[in-house]
Image 1: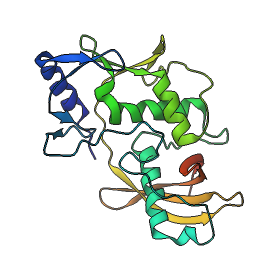
Image 2 (image 1 turned 90 degrees about the horizontal axis):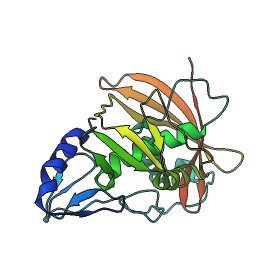
Image 3 (image 1 turned 90 degrees about the vertical axis):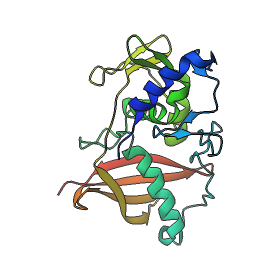
Image 4 (image 1 turned 135 degrees about the vertical axis):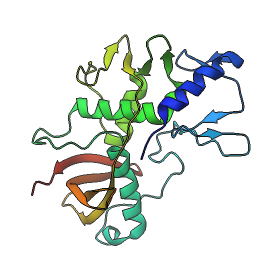
Length: 236
């Protein structure tokens, strides 16, 4: 799966001169009937605008009816589809790693996930420095995404040297980039945990449909939303 984000950003730059106004982040965006979605595709007036919602819902397109975790729900196909969709969001935002997870999911993990999520789904609303090709991700939106997907509050904002992400004056400054995924997750099993959470095992498959790696995850249900509590790589 290839995210054509660079194409979308270039199109945005071309359109800037055709009538602009300030976005909520202080950047300029065009007053035009053309909209570019998170895949870099152009949406015109005869197509639906799939702009992400900001009301705390877990799924941007719709709000699933998420019930409590029960012995019966683990075998419900609709629940399994929801869990797969939820966990795919983490996979496609560079979340699952092969490192030792004895320390659990860290603040850094959550923040980098949120930055990636905002970059891919909401980049039209981001301030963009055209001279340096740098995007500005607001820390407030990062905190909202972390709360939405992890159910916790960010305790410390910092830069990430390896990813070339700089934290400065309430923003995360990151270079625009193109990302490609050659693996797709599938659910291997779903069980009920002792604390009424889901224990979900996912396997990643390459383009040849060969399994490459797998993870155990713990997904809780809080306020009609799925929350990722933990994950552990499965080592053969």
